Image (tube, rainbow, N blue to C red):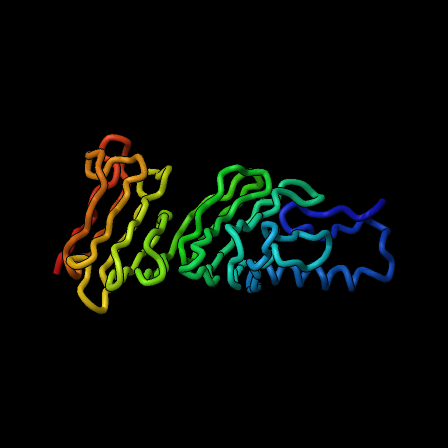
Length: 252
């Protein structure tokens, strides 16, 4: 009987009486795979200019998708998605990953980064500089914990940006006003933070327009304008009636 493979990590499961003389090699490889799953760290370049990046769960071998910690690297060349395999030869693959965004998303291109399983149509947006705990059940990937990063926006090079849930935006409007568009399909608890870090003047000189993107802000069907120097706000999405509400609005 030929070897079979486990579901989540595709460990080689040798049948009784098979693979004579190879048990040592197979066992050592399986132990290396288990080590990857427990403590493995790997850089995953996100620089492909023509297609999404798919992790591998190779049968009976170490591979990038078996590591615990994935560090996403490189300069994005397009809106990019990291795809988690939905299964192995052994069946549905359930995996837990810690994923760090260390990509370069320059202010000129504003490319987006997301994560999903191969069978899902619901990608998870990755805030710039964030670290995420992701659980994949083979059907969907779920965000369990998010450590937010910071995204610096300078109006001399970018004047419009579409936020994703979890964004911490540090905005310098010295050169011009900036428009921040809120996420299009928020869910309860999603948050976006905006802070004035202008080197000269500030929001009082060149304002920030917060585009509601069809959702209410504080119950009103109108955009929000930030017009005070040193202003710092955090918005949290509540429901379709109230929409985005202040967690705080500090002006000093």
